[in-house]
Image (tube, rainbow over all chains, first blue to last red):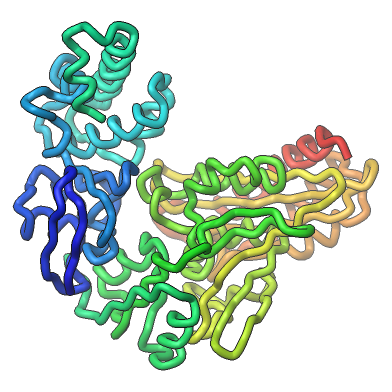
Amino acid sequence: MKVSLKVNGAERSGDVEPRVLLVDFLRTNLRLTGTHIGCDTSSCGACTVLIDGEPVKSCTVLAVQATGRSISTVEGLAQGGNLSPVQVGFHEEHGLQCGFCTPGMMLVGTALLERNPNPSEDDIRWAISGNICRCTGYMNIVKAIKHAAAMRDASQAAPQESHAAAAAGGE
Amino acid sequence: MFPAAFDYRAPTTLDEALSILTQHGDAAKVMAGGQSLIPLLKLRFASPELVVDIGRLPALNTIKRDDGYVTIGALARHVDVERSKELATSAPMMIEAAHWIADPLVRNRGTVVGSVCHADPAGDWGSVMLAYGADLVARSQTGERVLHADGFFEGPFTTTLRPDEVMTEIRIPVRKGRSGGAYLKLERKVGDFATVAVAVQVELDGNKIASAGIGLTAVGPHNLKATEAEKFLHGKEPSDEVIAEAARLAAGAAEPKDDLRGSAAYKKDVVRVFVQRGLRTAIGRAREVRA
């Protein structure tokens, strides 16, 4: 069955059985292996991608369901060699150790900041509550998303500053 | 994990969907958001020959106020409930319940109506529908049936919905008088199924309880309606003694089992405590409403 969708802005398509999951389509057919398979039971969030800007668990979406939709994966966060604000946040605040949950965490953080540019710590913790990290204890992940929010804020207040390019890349 | 192979159709009109279901009957399974069905397919607890994805049907993703009702369309997701301004005024208990469902990512895809049809005994929406006394609208090629939430659930994952039917919307009655609700849930962690949860909805007439609805989650073969407690509350002034007795009756209606989330005795007592707290909260909220 034909699947046509937009992935990180580019039109992509493939021919798959209806039972193929979106995460497998991304990883196997499109070779976008930044989206991870963790629990494979909709519990851990390692497979998080954005569909039309909203975070979902791609292990629990059929590839055929995504036809005509716009998907964002971790590979699409950096633009033109510039890390997105959320990626910078994870780098600056050491928001990862093993990195397995990181793509999902960064996509959730990205979607959160689009909806709520100035989230409280509580907002951030609720937003990532469907994503499990077994290394960090979440402290630095929360700090990383806060860092990204502050960066976006600063770049909007003073768009001529050097963060502007990175901030624009996240959108 | 892959599901067993199935055929897939994504009809673009309701008529087309109903025609497919009439042709294939029990061999077909309707999918909306897929957040319950896809895990079942992957674990191979379900192996339908055909999955009918209604996710592309138009105009079913709405939450809107009709005469005396607020209607939840078949494709309205949990997140749509969370953000609904209409429900904040007409059925706020739904918003309270939505926050407890699964996790934010699942709520971005899963639907209210799909969850009700899935009929997991630990599902939250069934209890909410029982407490509200909701009407469930089922369409097939032979017409429309309006089913009452009370009686819809027959057993674990079993309802009175027929294989040739699609539940197109849920209608929640909006009371004109002073009413309030509460949803209380005990879960081990975000995303876990309920150990116990309770939905309470009350309407006041002066100082008296005009009507009460109480739904119980995860303490029986399906969502349970605490009918005796509801009847007991009818027409009474909600004193501490009355609330305590209603909570005791509701706990009596629960039929929990021992499992890794707790013993049956413990769960029954959580029902009692939650109904007591829920009634106090719901009555407090009803008193704040200006009729």
